Length: 300
Image 1 (cartoon, rainbow, N blue to C red):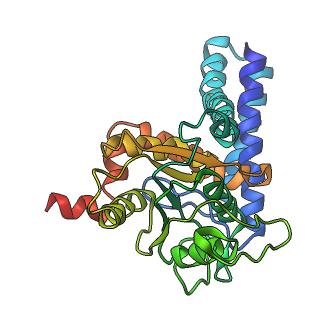
Image 2 (cartoon, rainbow, N blue to C red):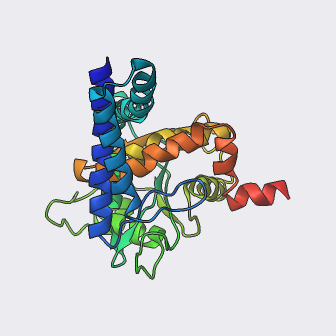
Image 3 (cartoon, rainbow, N blue to C red):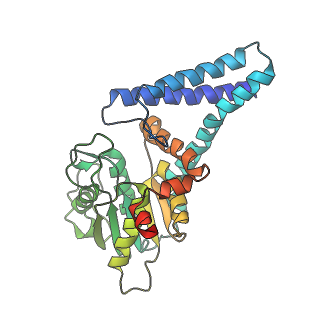
């Protein structure tokens, strides 16, 4: 048990080191945001080295086990949680295609959550979300909401909103009766023929959901309801999106995740993994929901 605990602690420390090195080398990446501030880039590799070293020293130390065992178990908690998180992430990236309840025409609506742009074009992570959205949508899908404003938190130089870039990407590939450029390696067309709705204001996940709901209510004024809505994001983001949907009373909405390549584990996934600790902490949901301008306006 001590060896397993040490391995989990040292393994998570290695992830912090790898993520820190990637952040230091790529100017478009930043460390995960903690509750009150974003740490300096050098904090990640330093914390990883400290965590891995402490785990190895504790398991090999001659100190009494009443001191070393609690230390090992404490260091192993994030490592064990990371293993569980990774298993859930992989399921969210692959399982929705098999177990989705919207087969046979697609859901009524699809909401795509935005992320970083590079030179006013979707980044790889965002392109994967858009591909997944085209797979989820079907001929019965009425609306596809592209949600995302002009981000300023990743060092991006984008001058257009994420929503605008996403909508253009889908139209270029045949979505909603677009011409479809048939670019190599990209989908040539889609069975989606509904309306593409741009939501260019949201700057965080909570606002993504709130503003997309508002756009759907505007787009379906004469219907009996919004109907089945599927939110498409990255697989590492699905857990937080589902919790926010429950907190907002949108239990009928579904969330699916586009697969994230392993090279993004140490940055995007690490950020989301740390966000889970904040979200599930006491009053964590209230802290997350408070950042939504819709929630603030509703409370005033």
